[in-house]
Length: 386
Image (cartoon, rainbow, N blue to C red; front, side, top):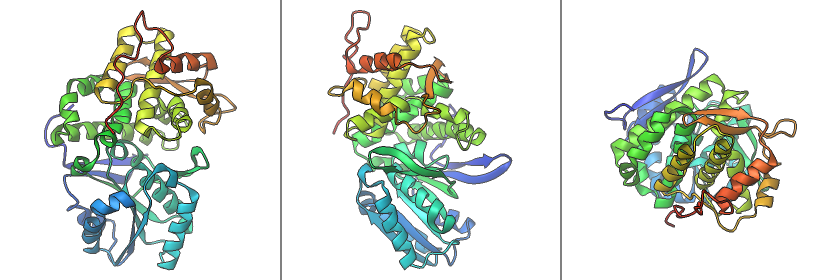
């Protein structure tokens, strides 16, 4: 992990040898106008898509910045919450764009968290068969995960991200100062994906997170800048080699097979990053039972997760229903789950042989039903602050 001012700078994402978009790191929204001018938005229509909560914080400010370079700026505000990431809201966004006479040369701005980014990206991919969009992520989770890589989509009934497209943004602009306005729970949610990055790709980064957790928890901007930049670098490295998840990109799904199933079974009462954290612990437990990682490695996964304020155990869930939900995972191939396991901390692999019994055993560990050498396995589990 390099030192220095990590709250400024950029990373370029490529497809092959071709640069596709930049990830820009700043401490304010002031540089957004310059970045948009580089994209040639002068005289173009821009629609800022955001949810009701984010709009109350940032819509006026961002609209003012963009008005300095765009021809016309409109906004589309929808109710916050995962339950609104659906085709009905996309239809209303289409209607807004049609009524405002948006053309293919115009631009959408996704201002918000993962729900907003996924929904806006999907609308951009499908409106007039493709319109430009940029990501302005305002949560830690979206900054390190959903804003990068071009995955877009919406939920269909109770099936998460079942309808979507791969569609790259023109820019990802991160104002790191927005982290200060997040609730404790929504800030810490992002740590689920961040810890995952260390587990699958960078052992030194995983232990750097452990050693800097106090600064991370108090949202020290320099520490957070280093953390976010490294997570973005890891995700960029993976998606550049496999932009449409034909192989290596599936490693980013570590913790997600069981995590998504838990998310559905709990009726989205738990946040995405919390469910990913639980899924990572269960997957690490399966890896340990196979003899791939040590007991100490597994304990480190649990301990770092708990230190980050994420749940390390789960009460009130039905193991059978979670396993049933896994059967509907969109990443299945020919009825077989592509499960991600750890060969060691910092190295993940795709495994198509994980049995229902192994998944049940991993779930039992986080549900508190499995012994841990005489320990309950739940003593470190604390729920994040509401």
